[in-house]
Image (tube, rainbow, N blue to C red):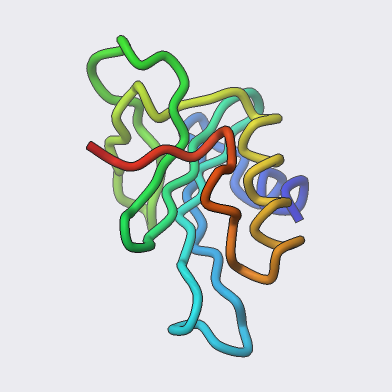
Length: 109
């Protein structure tokens, strides 16, 4: 799925996808997943919301494409592509519920 998403977007600005559990999209947290050729991010819309954290000292934003509009993502949330894939795999492997102790997701400040 990740390779297909990356191939479909392919521009200079990585795209953002919304990922939900089809059978019950309101019963499970939704993910915003930005994925480029070498970096990306994951935001889990849960209670509390969580996101990936790359460099916690990073400042500024990184542009991603969300429905043909620039979405500025905090630079501290941007991680290597393999981390994005690991988090997305955890979401799919656990039926839409990423374990609360997942090492790559942290509560959003």
